[in-house]
Length: 99
Image (tube, rainbow, N blue to C red; front, side):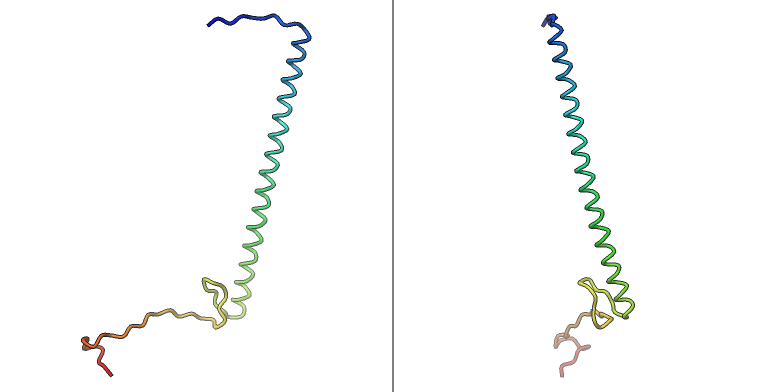
């Protein structure tokens, strides 16, 4: 395939240069706006995480100062949680006599 060079006049050249400058300026402006939006969202997320971490640490310090424990669902009011398992033996087991 053979390309032909077409001679353009000075008006077409100036219009092409102005058009290219406008496209580059628009792309740069759009890039700056997108970057600013992304940085803003990242800043908002960082503030939310920092406030949440501060709040949880504050709750844990208050619970520790009162001598309370801090369980998986929040502060406990009795201070200690003891978990265990209970089972009754069967009647056939000599270690567990029937009463």
